[in-house]
Length: 75
Image (tube, rainbow, N blue to C red; front, side, top):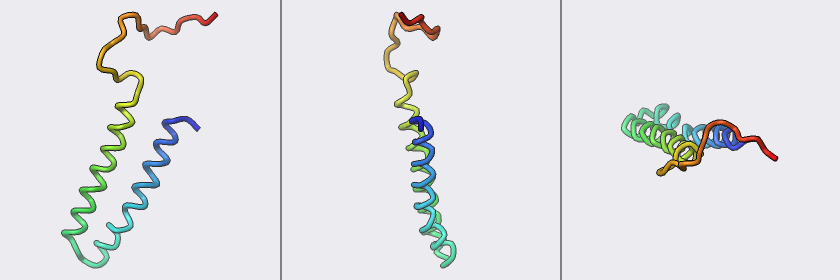
C-alpha cells in the first residue's frame, strides 16, 4: 500500500469516527453542537490534506538548481 492510499484510508477512518457525534447532535436536535462538530470535521479534513500536500516531494521552500522532472538513466 502506498503512502497516498494509507493517507486516504486514515482520513476516511478518522472522519467516519468523528461523524458519530454529529449524528447524535442532529438526532437530539442540538443544532449548535451539530454546527460546531461540522466545523471541526471540515477543519480536520482540510488539515489532513494540507499535511499530505506539504510532505509532497514537489512542495519545497527552495528549488534544487540541478533538479529535473526528466528521469535520469540509472547505472
